[in-house]
Length: 384
Ligand SMILES: Cc1ncc(COP(=O)(O)O)c(C=O)c1O
Image: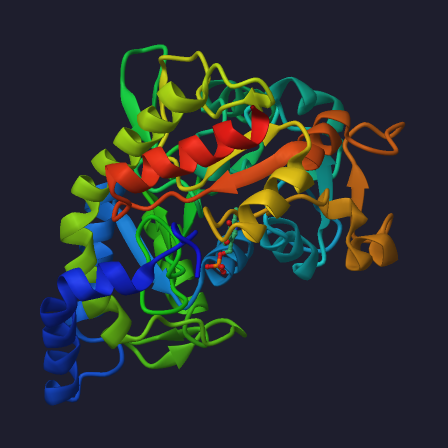
């Protein structure tokens, strides 16, 4: 048993058990299992939290991306620009519409390098899908400027970025998910705001797009007139999960504050450790990151992980360590369903460099200061 676990959902559940069970019990007692009150209230409150007009909840973040692409009219013959340092769903949802995913490199902050977008644009380009990775926004000022100039739709994969913000040149502070046409969030249990299993939500300011999203997440049916307007999946979020998430949402601002506090502790403890090549703190006071994951770049990554595992000290995860284009499905479909943004590219150099060194440290609000200090000390010991 690790002294500090990578995740600890049991602790959060124990802290709020009565309230969570009470909310779910209410739903079951009312027999209101699908669509009514709790789901609608959750959608409204979530949209408020993001400062968007509409929220359409789904059974996963992947489903939210799926309906967002469909609602944007992405389909065969189109291209959508995204990255190869992401969870595969960003790319797969594009490919599943029949469109082609066009992969550009990321910067050292793990996010889409906006300077690589223009060379990836072709006459077929319909949309850009920036992925706000690890809880940090892409440079949305730059992405939106290009999208506007080139007439492209933006669909944000904000799966990991609920609550992340960016101050724009005009002084307004905008939240993840509200820059483009649709913003898609994952509410998977391990995310900063997580349901009891899988869940997701799409947000938008556009009333017509909201209607499409709502119909497309539930068999294409308009629940008012009971007619079917699209061939669509059933991606609905259960009412019982919405009730669970509504309880958790109350605590989210406090959890976010604690994440940032833990990130600061890691920064102070690890910033001068020889062997630690990069901490996820980047000089840009426009952006406020939420540290959905706390990912560092280190020397001798696999040895460090083995050391921590052998001693059962701190549990870490080497995740997103394979450039997506190295996955079997991508090798099989190259050319047909995806291409590199720069047509001469055979790989994406920063993506590859990052993948070699990434390791994720425990990051959840229930971590105690003693546990964070312990993780820092064990890493320091390894590099001594
Ligand atoms: C960047 C990114 N996009 C999409 C998804 C898909 O979300 P879900 O797992 O809720 O389907 C995830 C989930 O891990 C993600 O991290």
